[in-house]
Length: 417
Image 1 (cartoon, helix red, strand yellow):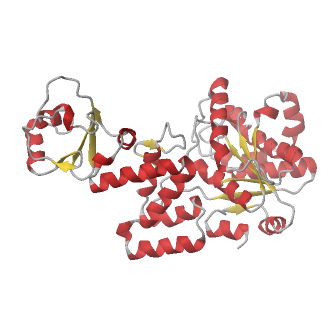
Image 2: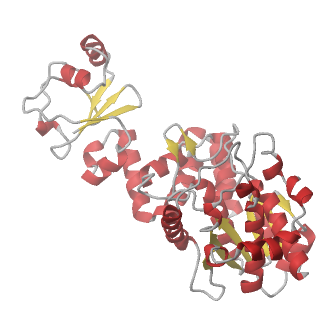
Image 3: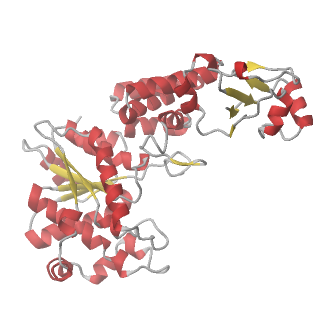
């Protein structure tokens, strides 16, 4: 299977500027240099950005040379694509800080030491020092206004309004392609389907300015089966930064993938071979309750992003919750597993009854409701059902002498410190 065929199989080819020409170029002995851009619009990448990172990695594993471009300059401007209104402009110091963090996040995914070693660049290095007159004369002259207005990223904003600042974003991103072609011999830009207009504009600029042939390739924006944007949850965005989304939360996000989406996500986000994915598909059809595909997806991705030790802890926490063996968890594993659940701090010297604790901790709405919850067997303390409403809750009852994990019903967890 060729690289393009593998990308097709994984659903990672949406548009290509010249499919036949790119296939011929990739078949040549000389590797192709390609790039993807990552604007620092936050201090961390999301799992939506991960698709582009892993496409770069697939190209590198096939022998090609990837460039990860951090948009230190374009991040100061803002891409109008996919937005209904003008973005808020962030301070230069903030964007610089975010760009540095994103650089560090990108480094583990690519090989920077091999024969086809990857490269990290920041477009502020050339755009930040470029005089406005040079940009307008040398670059802007290649962009007819009707051509720019026809691009989806601009056209979609004409009714709601677009400033010249965001209107110029296409020119800046296109100049990135031209500059990387000049400096690195870059011939291919990749990105999500919402970047098609910017990518084709960049390829056109290289052709007009240098008469050179380049290519653009996009993959579909990754969504779940119901059309929900990947990585958007009730709790917020799923980040790659462990400080923003813990490895356990990250693992659980993928474990909770629905059956209709899991196979396509396995293709996009893992490096499992086709035979292994087919085996997981068959296992899902035969016994969906085991969720083997979801566990494989969660394990592969958590290991890729956070490492084997984080995956081991996430699996241990999940199993402890499922089997009720919470006493086997270490302190840090309890904090990881229950870091996002409602938490109540018990700082009074006397030991409250279970009924009082449920009410004071906001677990049950009233003493009557608390007694009803206890009598019906809906309350579990540290994995064990508790039916004694008058039981005094002491420090000694806590895991490691400091934590009570209370479950109400099947899945509502609370942490008492």
